[in-house]
Amino acid sequence: MAYRILAINPGSTSTKVALYEDEKRIFTRLVPLDEKELEGKHNLFDQLPLHERAVQETLKANNVDVSSLNVIMARGGLLPPVKPGGYKVNDTMKELIRSGELSPHPSNLAALIADDLGAPYGIPCYIYDAPSASNMPPIARITGIPEITRESTCHVLNSRAVAHKVAQKEFGKKYGEMRFIVAHLGGGISFSSHMYGKIVDSAGDDDGAFSPERSGGLPLLDVLKLYDSGKYTYDEMRRKIRGQGGLRGHLGTADCREIEEMVWSGDEYAELLYKAQAYQIAKGIGLQAAAMKGQVDGIILTGGLAFSKMLTDWVSEYVSFVAPVFVYPGENEMESLALGGLRILRGEEKAREFKL
Image (tube, rainbow, N blue to C red):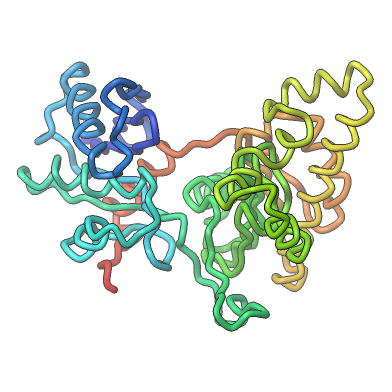
């Protein structure tokens, strides 16, 4: 019999729910949360009942008996640094999430939702590939300011999933046998170095290339001068870095389909900016190649922006000398969770116990 796997991924205004039987997707649902009910619920834990109801109603509408599930997979939250792969949802994890000490993000709720749903039936629940997951060595964590340590915060869930897929489809090998650089191109852009199944270095949304909505790495003294000018509050500066930066800041839109139309219509400034984004993506890949001493089997471009052939072609022109470039567009988070759970159920991976 096939394993039945439920995947849960709460967002700021919706909840994604998916059911898989082995590798086969039975359904995926994106359930919008009621805007009126969300009003005034600025505290993350006030939103928890809304997400739980969305999951329960989805299961009911699709005639899914919770007791028939073999495992429940939850999106990993913004936990302290952990290793890639699965972690059992345990009391230590739940207490940390409920403490409010973590950076607030709806993904933190996923483990709580999964446990509330599965515990009465004794169904195992795991998070998988949390954003903070990596195997970065100490040398990669040092910065020039003693009070600040580099931590890995990249799109681990989709990056590792697509690396598994490329290893099998393009090389006929296992992920743990390969050396990849993965560039996740979305509203934020991140890079990760995958060496024989381990993420040995990465650059998050704020570290490298600017993206459709984020500023990326900036000259720090200029940032301090801009903030010190008094023109912008802390919150306004934060929005310029995350949400109102990047292509949106320059062109007033983060929709790359619109930007491509500008380019095709002869807008030279839009073309310059779009090419500059490709240029910075290529530089980010180059930094990861250096961290891997050039021992790279393949470069993978993934995420929503990877649907833009214009962009991926420009990036490939810069980096194809390093290694072959594979374009796998999209963000397959629900599939990634489900396949991670399947590997745990089949004994191909062993889930860890979360500890502080």
